Image (cartoon, rainbow, N blue to C red; front, top):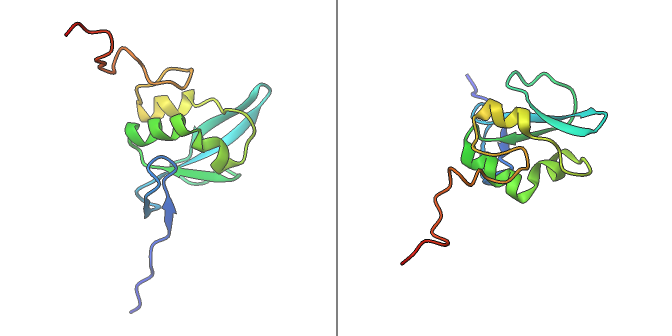
Length: 110
């Protein structure tokens, strides 16, 4: 019996290749104000998809690099609020990391 190879995709956050079973598919859905990112765990939504690890670190890195817009070929910055709540990522609606959760040494006395 011949075993088939599992399809592999590249994570838009960390740029590493992984099996499609390990990655979450994301699609851009157009609305009146622009595009919003929607998670597609069942891989059934129509349109071009981007893949990301279901890890808040990979998600934050993809948002910081604006990789979703390039991978999905949409103009502008897509709204990633729904995807952030799906992944429970520590980001705000502006796309920047939540500064209350990020420990910073800037401005601390020595």
